[in-house]
Amino acid sequence: MLKKLSLGIVIGAFFVYLSLRGIDLNGITAGLKRANLFFIIPFLCLMTLIQVLKSYRWGIIMKPVAKVDQFSLFAVTNVGLMAVIAIPARVGELARPYLISTKTGTSMSSALGTIMVERVLDALSILAVFFTVVMFTPLPPWLISGSIIFLFLVLAFLGLMTFLILKKEASLELLSPVLTLFPERWRFKLIRLTGNLIDGFKIISRLQSMCQLVFLSLVIWVIDAVSMYVLFFAFDITLPLSAAFVLMPIIILGIAIPTAPGFVGNWHFFCVLGLGLFGINKTDALTYAIVLHFLSIGIVVVLGLAFLPFNHFSLADIKNKFSMNSQEYVNPDKSHITQHITGLDK
Image 1 (cartoon, rainbow, N blue to C red):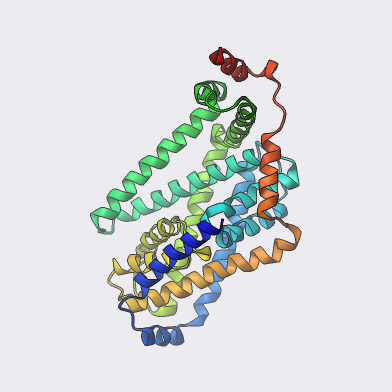
Image 2: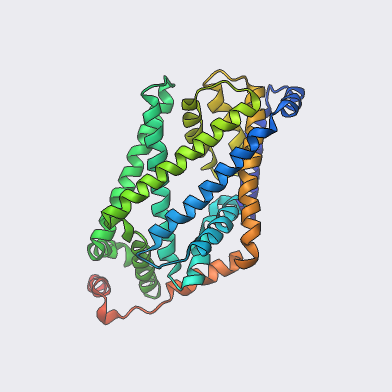
């Protein structure tokens, strides 16, 4: 963990350097003083609404696995997203599966599967909004081609998830030659973990629920882009709404890079990069990036801390919980895949 944190800090520091290079620091100070604080209020309201919608959407994804009340979903979502911000190298992504599995008794690996479904929905929604804007806004070829490649990767992963849930037994059979490479004491654990993970994809097989989830995901990311647009007014940035829809995926792409806690550095660099595409000078762009980052991270941290007393966890807890899930008993006599692996050993 210390090595990952150190590497993340180094990468983050590099992005901070790139963001500050050639910047007029006095210009940033002046820009912050001129900011119209009135627009911060609607921005924070929109960000809070996004958190509510994300927790509601997760509840729909969780339904085939476990039914969870909305308050618990909202509390765990906020604490989990705060963990993503606070813990380096995306290790914080395991906080939500751990917390919800603790509350419901659901397998942690199944809960992790639901998070993977959520991430695919997010990626597809962001790309759908982006490509809609591209039809009306000229953008650099590298940005469009990179987005197309990413779209194909996401669609391929969604196709794999769909195959895994619709053909679960066949999928485990296909994995059996790989499982034979592991010591026997690990095989049953891997079978269990893989099976539970696939169970987290169950919502994909329910067409009506998926349509609802796609709609919710589009709404979430449209609101996110609108919130960025609202914040433009605080700095007298005269750009169209379409610019916010372009800026959003660029920032999300940037913070996907594992760096220092809080996405410090990469958030700012990619925000400046995105605004630069529309002719915003670097000093004004960084001023906007600083405030956008502070408010976006701040609302997540405040909500996370508010619910943290009811959702305690530690990295040791997560590790132990995951270990317990992997050690659940698998009856060799009732497992078709276990018999198949045994046959390969012979």
